[in-house]
Image (tube, rainbow over all chains, first blue to last red):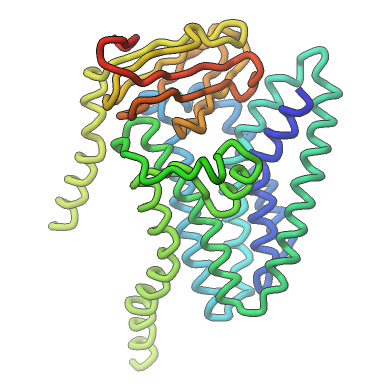
Length: 255
Length: 118
């Protein structure tokens, strides 16, 4: 149980630690907002846990998958606005957006660990293993998060920092394909390639790369399509914003 | 107006597979004492199949499969469905993430004759 707790802790919480580091390393990154978002996401996940048996029965048993999809779509919109404001140097107004992104990522990932934790807390022999496993998992996740923060903070070019953040996000967003395929709202597709011989999904590197940039050894067409759309989304968002709203603002100013 | 019509069409196309649910082959896998019963199920090649997991244990189980790219929580004394396929011939492992040592199972994709799908 100890090893399983460590593995599940890292798997379910590493995306939270990584996004925290990515956002903190951006211009105007504020730990207080990020912690607030994480706490809000955690509380929302606890709230969902107590209603999960009902929620998961919605939409022919696909309730949780659809909720996670909805949260990811909202997060993608938030990322577009975050990148636009960061790119324009309007960093002070991105803090609430970074908090929103933390709420989303914590909510959709931590719910799985809460299920595990609460289900086994009552087991007679579980106490020590669970506590120790959580402490070890926390230590590993924190270490990875700190290393990532140092690496991203060292990048001098703002555009590259935002690109790295976008690629991380695209990996999370691409999960929508699997969620919708699982509940039959997307037709299953053939795997485009198989790189499990190099890095298997269930290996340590596979886990880490999956969280870091959405690596899949056997991605489907839908997965790659959503991944690429998510990578390009902030660019398209900034372009459309400048085209539609920027022009309107300029016209308004002239009037 | 055109935009509304396009949105409705897209929504209907997206939800269309729901109508086909009843026609899909189904395989039932029970979870008892953190074991999958049966441990191995055979499904036909190139067909979408509905895997129904019925959890008889009081504790939840999280079905996970790297081979099938699936992850689903099944609460205690409840059931859940995962759609898989169409898949090529092969052996696809799945496991219970909360009991990885005992809850292990395989989906064998083979010819249409040898199948557990109803």
